[in-house]
Image (tube, rainbow, N blue to C red; front, side):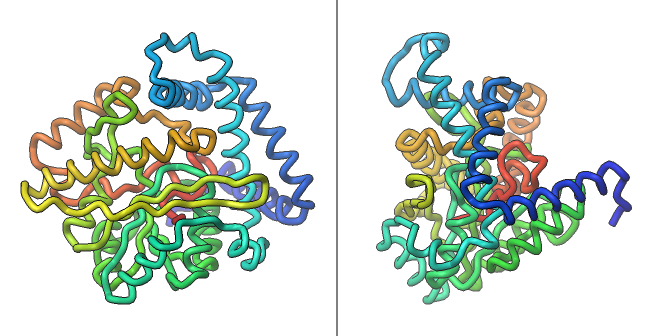
Length: 354
């Protein structure tokens, strides 16, 4: 492991102090501070908020059925983006405080369609692995803890290794304490192989999968445009026979949560491996679109998703690799999206929730 720089050590110390302070403050005070920070970020309209509003315009247009120009959505868009920033702040707040939230509160405050959760547990009991693929919605850390408490035993999740290493290690210890096995995307065994092994053992793997970070994403129709989603969830299902089940999470009031576990996306009977992965990923995108339209205020996407917003060179690499038969066929693009640490623009816990 490389020696941390002074700046990285300082970042780690400030982060640790902040984490401890958030856990010591009364919840009402901490919530007010996080809402204040969200409002400040929203008013400044930095790059992340601008990207967020660009993504939300597609959601509003899809939901309303309008073909109005983007600037016609002004008041509605600004109100929605503020709600998203507050929801995003709540996600961070609860992630930091999850270690002190009683299990009883997590169990009592969760609303979910229990029949598909029971089906998940039945698959696992019979030795069949399950893949929960999620968009960046709600508090998937809390949902991950909830599904462990109700019988999953543990979950497996990929996470991007970000600097400073000490902060990554803190999150790693924190998640492991909740019952999660974190698979780093670098600095160890290939995450796809590790997750495939766990699925063959009947484990539950969770992947946040509404944005592709690799050069091997699958191009899908998403909110009336083209977007890149990771091939990993579908590729794992094709390779291992695990059940691919989309999941969405959202907040209920100020103190409760909800999740919906959707029906399994089956592996198509016909087609090449690449064609099967593409078809399953398109279905996944359609489920995500439905979930986001139902709870747009809880979609924390401050990163570019749509092809028209992406770097042309990155997009060209993705398409070149797809034409060459790489990527999904090899199991790359494992669904590890938007970094897993506090420096990321998409939340500190990618892939670790249910």
